[in-house]
Image (cartoon, rainbow, N blue to C red; front, side, top):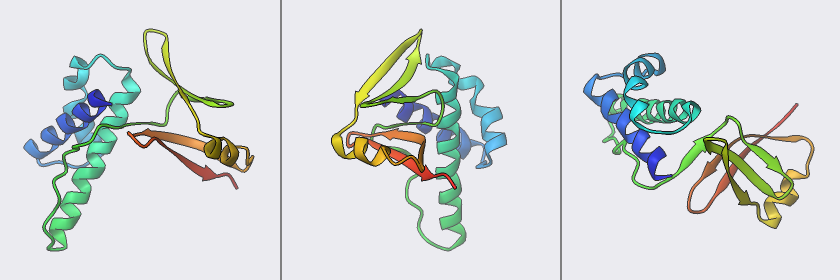
Length: 137
């Protein structure tokens, strides 16, 4: 979680230095520099996307004449929409070198996920741990 936060903040610094908040330009500028982080590539892509969203939000606040909040992330977290699995009572996601992290889901989350009209699209791990879900039509 600390590494992901550091990657997002690194991308935000690059975006501020180059005055960009578009995903394409931020990706071109920051992806090569993220090679220093020894994590799977889709975590890098998600970090770039998160940074882009924070930079865009800051620009939007400035346009509306509001004082923007700092775009930098202070709390550790990790987000991904790639490669994870929910196996009954476990959330499993890869961290590299064929190793996985397995996090037990609480009873309430297991009960909610029994609904077949829900499809888990991504997860957010924070000290409070959350899953994002969306209904399939």
